[in-house]
Length: 211
Image (cartoon, rainbow, N blue to C red):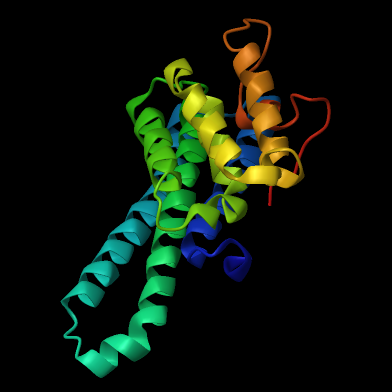
């Protein structure tokens, strides 16, 4: 999975841990035993792992920038450096989407919450970087997660990203993701809907796997 999406494994582990937390939360709610303190404590553990992962990523990026580079070294290492930069960008995208997912699970559906809003903005900013326009193909899940909670004023930016992917906006997971977002945006604010990411991903009638 790490090789397929191009990001470091700790970000994917955080997403898996958040999914497990969501299952636990629903079971506790069904049993009438859920407490805010227990949910917060479990969420803090996942959040801490995410923050540690992001700090470690930034430290490694700074170390690579400080490495002395001779002419021959730069020639032979340029492809490795580009690959490392692409992996770092992908990891940031998935980690920020994981922060959104965790915040929705622990706080509920609050798109205007600073953590959710800032993380969604960061996912969008990273996907808009021109260095690797193909990164959207391996970041469809973060694209959709961020789009689901995005402010209405930023909807067109998500459409533009999908348009820039060419034929992928009509076929494959990019197009499927954009169709999910359009349905979510059209129904935004409906009081009868119990909003969460699972609701968003099955808003067209059946859950969609965007991997």
